[in-house]
Image (cartoon, rainbow, N blue to C red; front, side, top):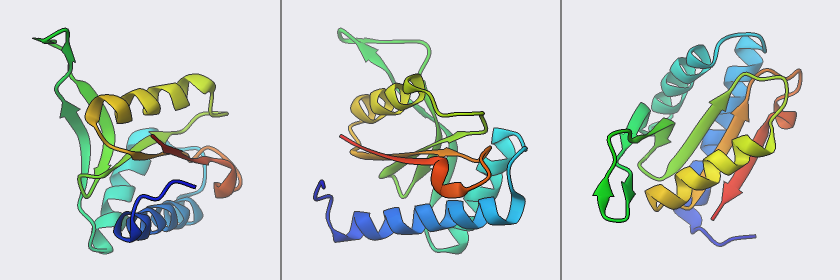
Length: 128
């Protein structure tokens, strides 16, 4: 397991628990933006900062590209949440999150798929 430090791991536990509470309360079948919105509320009620649809500048060979990355949620400036409401998490979803982490310089992210009967089946932790 990666050593991300006690503070970041504590935040990660809060993020996972927040997602669990959102899933328990709302269940599957809603749009991603609904889960995003409710997650922001759940996370901020726990004392964490949570920002939606954060734009991260994207550079290629020294050129700033017109289209920035767009992160679903950024928690405490340190954890990326990629929110999904899909039948199954695909390899491309994990690759997307890994690219977001690499290009943003962050180490920890979660894929959270809320369109599952059991929350534990919809969450994936990704560490670079």
